[in-house]
Image 1 (cartoon, rainbow, N blue to C red):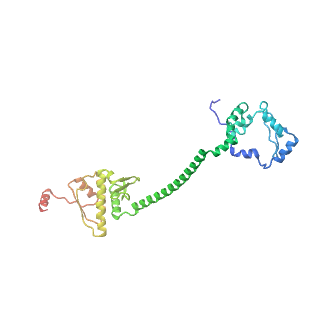
Image 2: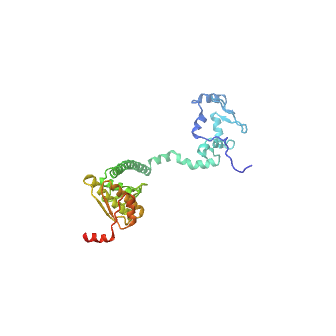
Image 3: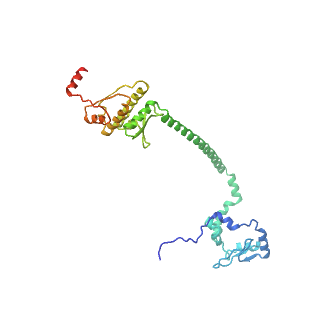
Length: 317
């Protein structure tokens, strides 16, 4: 046999909410039947039928005895040597645990002596008239009223805060100037989609905020040097793009603007210039072959200038 405990599925869990129906059943007025039982005999041995049929007794226990007569009940209650109140452990104890109802003498007398003074009429009246208790009750009512007022104010403040935050979010996302929207597009392209939006703070004038693709938000001064340069370049490109769309597309002249970018950042910058070249003439000067090759990969026409001619150009300038 295994030493592991197993759950006894035959035991039905006790539900205290069913106790009323278990005790009373469907009988709403048991007194006429009780009157007939008392008239027949003040003491009955065996199960009692109140109209729903007598309960079947347990064979391993003695038959129940029910006392109906007043004198007989008094005799039973006063004879603690013959009769015991321990039976209440199987009735009240199932719901309330161990109480004074199931105690026998002398334990019952000792516990009763402890609690009885609290229920004497004079003690109860003194409690009602006690000024300290009355003061505490008044203070409790005031605290309850204050708590209710604070709870109402808190609910109003929370609603107001939510509306303000929603208005701030709407402004930062929907009411930004056109330059910021163009800069957001360029910055997203320059960073390869790592950052998706640039916007001005509604609570800190003059402060720029950038949003990452994962939802994180950063101030411009928190960015790395390379990312900040991409951000500032995005604003320059946004101004150029806005000027070209609203007025006249002008040529864009670049002089080694990629020197502080790593190869991936440089590649993203060249992609943006390739897009702008559909509307603007883009002229890039560089003395670095990798930069030349990047522009060439994106359709730029490469013009080599000999070293002796560079000197002549410098003198002409």
